[in-house]
Length: 395
Image 1 (cartoon, rainbow, N blue to C red):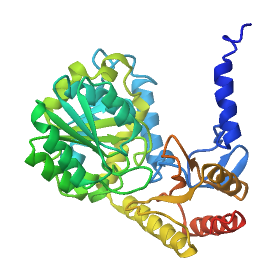
Image 2: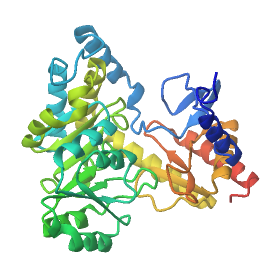
Image 3: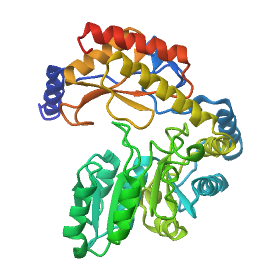
Image 4: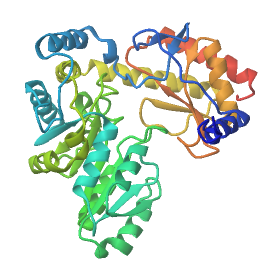
């Protein structure tokens, strides 16, 4: 076989990763996603899951999923716009709209698909998209799919955002300002009130990706928009159903006319099969649980604050997170990989975050504490962090 068909160019690039000390293999989890899991045959404390509220293996959600399968089968059977939209999808969209305090919600197969579908559907030639430089990869990719022009402002820098708007607003029909609600690598919040003020001053639309705010911030987990009391002033709010809600999927919340338009122009809805009934059934139950009680979000925040306090006290650089997301900065990429490996060997699973997920020189471990962790598990994890960090001269 020729060198071309051996894909030697990929082999060479993989070898480069190995030489740089940043090559990794995808871990295999052998249990349900809980506070403790078995990974590659080893039982470890799980500090890398987006399962913020412990819903991914919750009995109520599992029961609802099974009941949905019994009634509707295992698959939607088609794209949403043909015959893949059943009464469960309609109910979940209605329930989410009430929960989010918005007119309407449109479901997507994932948060990534949501950004890929919505941005290109609501912007076009003659428009401008203005994006925070640290926005999620799905926003970047969704923006690239649009025919609109693009501009980037420095992370959470309102002076720079104003400068962009002053220089460019007059040249475009519509301007869409896009930001994450919670920035997933550092855990900081967007300056939404200031962004909205600027948007209204310059007659711009606003778009917030609240993947890590949904189920975490606001009343009973209603999100970042609710947290800042900005209902009616944000035009498009994106959320995922794969993190705090425990399953998979995405949604956009906003005006009813938005939903009507997306049903004709959002490509993931037109060309990819809708969410399966089991997922939708479980998500209906998840929304119900959040509406019933704030105990899940309260416990999440208590655990997050507890862990951060212990890590800061131990001397770790945990940045300036404003949410349960806790970055533990190492900065050196190869050392970050070693730190993660040694933690695993000592019974704690924390995924390393390196380039290209974050800029070079900003490598860190990203800790994701959940509502299902016990204080004893968190104490044990901190003790392991301290032990390994001292061995590696990190603290």
